[in-house]
Image (tube, rainbow, N blue to C red; front, side):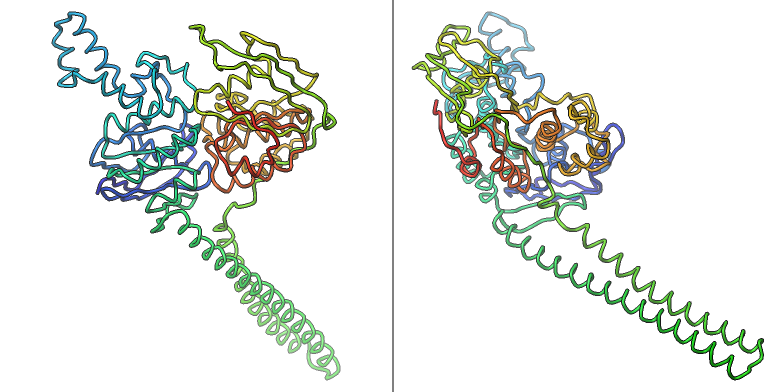
Length: 529
């Protein structure tokens, strides 16, 4: 076996459990997808398998050191060389080339004298031409950051690969390249993803839920078919138990009424027959005991049926429970909101971002898709249009409007406060406490999650909380800006987010490489960079 995980359990620092007693075996060369609702611990499980986290209980055995591609921006990585995991070798090589005879440098470098050339080849292969190893990680777009880590696949040729939402931020060409790598590689591979095209390349599907991990022997389409059959069977069992519960309650009521009639009838008969009081009382006591036993038997039947029904309902998916309603914006359709003329932006080296200055108009009611390759300046353009950056050339005119910008890093959330505190801070409508908690529940934040800090949330949970906070603020924005909104969402939440955005009656500005989402969002205008 390439990966064996036994009895894995993990608790947050506040001792709240995430999952318990997970077992997973992945053979050499297997290609496995790990799916499940947001917040069940998929990313945490990958980090444990990668050796980045220590489980609360259990053990992990891996035949080779995994190459791990994280979901979120890797902290503490200052430049491309560190993202690739070769910074020490590069420093050692450059020190030697500068005349150093320190033996430590030679030990670090080993025989890897062509490390810089191999890095250059790998970066070029993944679309990062002319980006030096010293380039700061902060200068990279989300897509470029992911590309840099993906280049490590070509550089290191690992035998075990762990991917956490690897298509986040990636343009279409790079996604296709990643798909090709997955098809061709002989490495053992586990991927957490919401990208259905990627999921269908993988041979085996594992579903992680609050009840544990379950293996399906096929790709995502196979899993979906099996789940449909299982869900249908589960629904039928629930309906059968509901029918049985109604029948049991009806019979209990009938027995109770019949016993009451018999007791009343017996009392009348005994009174007419002139029976002694002691005999009447004895027979009455016997009847009551018999009725009590009968009631107890029917009560036990009802309790058993109710217990089975509760257990079956717990097995049902959270599908369609996510509900985030966005009201209509207040600005009338057709009003010009933003006008940009001759717009361009220069990097510190003075190079213009776009070969031709941009002229853009956005009117109320428009649904605009900003599209382009990684590094083409999509996020920069949004920040220019919103006034967060000053253009090098050109002008931007904005009407008096309110905008809500949901960026890739979910910066609207404060990492060190709880889910409930975050919602309370945005409660400009002064909603009652119970109404606020209802809103959180609709966004799939049950009571046991309210004390969890935002730092502990998965990417999909951060997205849901950000949208929830927007709905409880003092107003619905005239302009909703979404930067790669489908990143990190589980598939079911993705479907419901799509429905939510489709029903939003306001102006939409969206950066996304998810073609399905763009189509469903009803885009009316495209800005291609």
